[in-house]
Length: 263
Image (cartoon, rainbow, N blue to C red; front, side, top):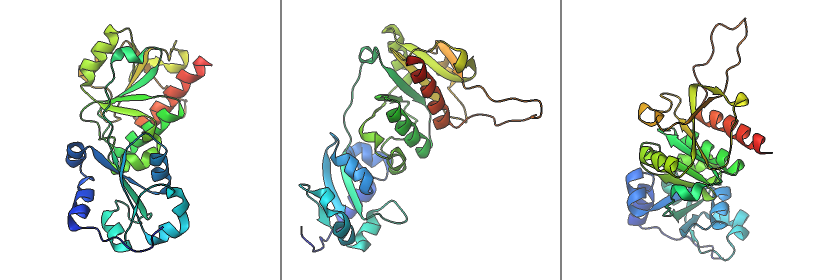
């Protein structure tokens, strides 16, 4: 392994930094992966890797992880210019955004997730990680949901982004086609039926989750066939409670119940 530094051009630095912005990620179909665990997950996935940049210190400690992989060693100053983190981990990769197209028919016998207007990167990343835990392969996002390849989303997924397909589309149109294909549409709503008293099926089903600020929006409600909710704990000594659950926590609780009933 070579120990000298590779001098990144200003144009290359500018290009990599542009991938921190949604517009340029979509334009170039590439995104940033940062950190030892995430890059390791990337290299074990089917995603295309177009560049790996590491510091000499990282190479000395972790070089074996890049066996048979091409990489460029940059100095700490250059890595700091590239990194999206306050303390750069010493390794950053550029990966291609996969082109994914799925029809509702391909979702039969599966449980999938649809997200309406989730705009917090940490929430989306955690939902992707949670979906991976519960064996969910597909997540469908409204156009105004935060980009799944945002650097903060990637960090929050802890590598699950490489195992869960995330697709941005017209959610209203997609759910309509799903219903026509015989897919069950569940919606997480404040006034829904108690999930612990509902007959949930994880076969040929889509769970729709909205943001905690507005929930599932009005334009999608006509597509919801089964309204469900996670019941709040109430007692005589409690006069108030939280207005809603965090979207990622609600997703975890509901998915756990779907999978529990399958066993």
